[in-house]
Image (tube, rainbow, N blue to C red; front, side, top):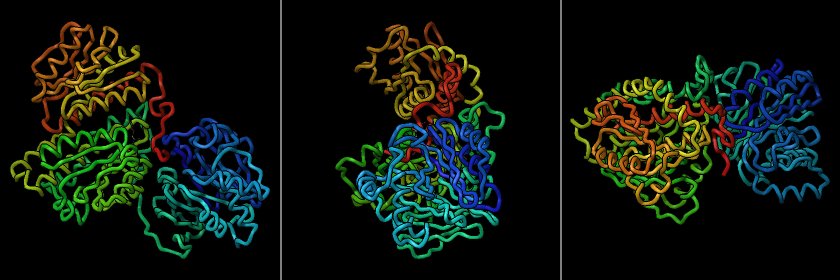
Length: 610
Ligand code: F6R
């Protein structure tokens, strides 16, 4: 989705803006632009397509200056055109915007009446004119004009604004969309995502809802919703530059798949080191909250929803608590029943998915008081709005298709399950030691699964020519089948569906013929015999089976049945290990089809719109 970067410095900021925008590319975008102030002249460059094209144009035009803003746009209001790309300018006021202004039509009419001429179809241009209007009707400076303008907006925004008449300041505002300030030496920055400025500084201030701020070269002043100065805490970001670079890999998705043993080891580190599953993993007050709840409601989207769907099996069977899992975009619009004794768990890699954030707000409005966020991005919106937090330690995930974020979410959810089990008297000391040992072995088992890459790549060649695929799983592994199908469709554009294997005969079996590859996740667990019968149903209709079994499963390949064996069955953590092959299958099928693995068409990394 859209990205913002801005800088005020004693040096030319164009390289800072361009590098920042390149680091934001992973979020998904269709056009980009910068506006830079040199003396009293604003120079703007906008291009459709890659940031590199915009950069080349800026270089050719010799754009340079010590104050500037930049943006990557993901079209919402108005098509993908240069005129709709940000920054938008209203007579010297230049601005970039993330989010959606809900009352933009009403404001547009009003501003037209005041003589403003619109050059784009965006909701953003309304804000530029509104700020200009306030500047020319009594506001003392661009900060005051911004503060007045945002009071007239409804919707979500992160804004960065410069004015040709005020070369000494960059002003910003935040409501509903993430925005942070980066603190440098004699220079300061703003960004929607820390990765955009990490090359310049690690010292950051996360702006809060309703904040505005003024950045000069020498300082930053933040103002609260009532425009009174406020102090906001400084943080030292732990995002590393290495996590934002490709290194020896061809794609970020490949890198991130291979980082999973490390990401999992980091995520479980505290439990392994402590030698116990302690409630304090989820925050200081967690023990009191988690002991008092009587059930769990999980809200999430996409891959994160599948992590929640897996956790349901764990929570009900290990912790003995009722758990329901719901797609956030559905929950937020239905008349839901709220039991305040239930803990609302949101799962979000980015921590800024709008549907999940709104579902959380809705849950609170219905009377839920206990909330926990499982998130991969420090200080992002969803954990900040939650009572308890568990940060996964996957590191920055750049590939649009989620991989290491998913498996670390599963690891965090498993830890939550055992903590709940202990607090609710369902997990005794002996079982705890056993779960600890299983967790300790997890990174190694995942590494073992990664070693299957050559075999999986060979299968993927055959998938690459197919139009459809089916994924089957049962129990704990049904959500992994769903995740496998999602990965395949996202990055190869092959139509893929997943079913609980027992559902096959109730309809989807009609799809099976010689042209239909059927991927089966068949670990050596109590459901294996049932899965084998389901496989027979497929074979009998001529379907070709691609089976991910365990080392210790008792069955072998035969005509039309291909088998790859993951490590020996790892018990309840098996869904994590069985995720690796389906990720690699999708990755290699995408390579064979030549699709854009890291930036699949039509998708964005952080979905901050409805
Ligand atoms: C799929 C994928 C998406 C996200 C979904 C939620 O590979 O990445 O389905 O899982 O958009 O995103 P987060 O977890 O950031 O809330």
